[in-house]
Amino acid sequence: MSVTSAITQLQTTTAINESKQPKTSTNDVTDSNMFLKLMLKQMEQQDPTEPTDNSQWLAQMAQYSSLEAMNNLNASFSEVSNKINELSETVNSSNIISQTLSLVGKDVTVTIPVLDENGKVVSTQDISGKVDEVSFENGEGMINVNGTTYSISEIKSIRP
Image (cartoon, rainbow, N blue to C red; front, side):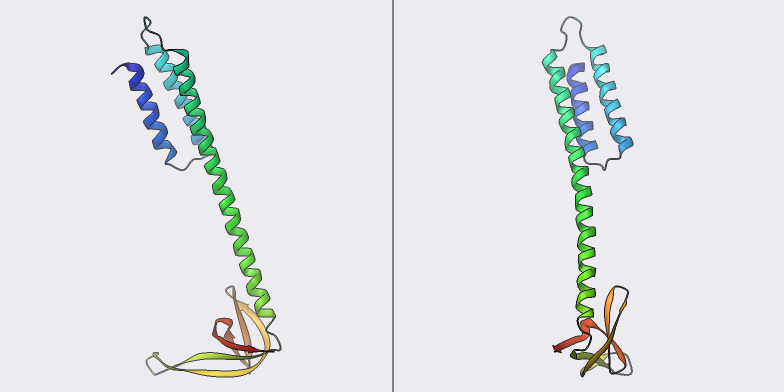
């Protein structure tokens, strides 16, 4: 195996391994420097009687540029994905708030568990009444019916 092909193989293996790891801006600069150092070393070590063809150098540069562009695109997609997740959480919170606030003044039936002395659920009980007020605890909507607070997840039915 010639020095040129060994270095090319090393560059390819390094690029593949690096593409699998998360990137930071510092690593991107390091990777660029490493690529240039390897390319310079390859130039120094080439056989003067059989110099590497310019098209091979251009091909290596193009491969590296493509890999770098893919890494940048991947980072951009990650940022977009994070923003979409944040937006989704905000919309979900807004929906919970709207749903809970819309219950004020409505007649509801909530189903609550009935526990035995060991804390085991033995049955359920339905409680009906008008929603007097609403509140929020740990991001969850709560309603007050007949002086007792229940989670909106315990609502069985809603009547106007």
